[in-house]
Image 1: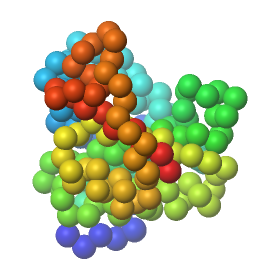
Image 2: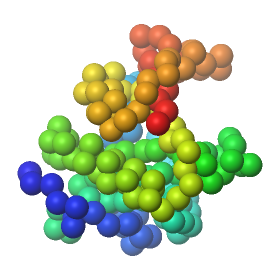
Image 3: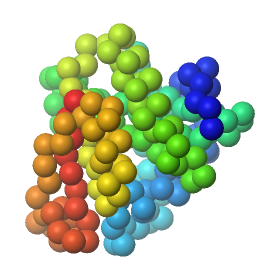
Length: 175
């Protein structure tokens, strides 16, 4: 697949169905957690994405890479809600790639495009991310685009399947 920046555009509410389809397909795999049940919270997740698509700003956006009319991957930078005073300085990142488009450099390509755009059009000081996939490819991809691995997020006191253990290890990254 030849990657072309002309195939990248900001997503709109009209792209919701494809965005959600990719997210729903990849989340259980990305989180490597057999206990993850997305279906019982589908209304919450759908409302979250619809709201985020409708309230994008110069810094906080959803970008998509299209193969014709097919959304092959999307990447978002969203405000870090834990730091409202520093709202304009901290972003959380997400990347979802449609099955069949993975492992060809698309994730790195799309993330680099988005991060370059954010550096030119915002005051972002830090981009934060977590990675709970057990795949080394996902970790090397994050390092390739400039993230520094901070370490494991400790095991959750509430749900022992989240955090530093064999069932669902979570790593924290910062850029």
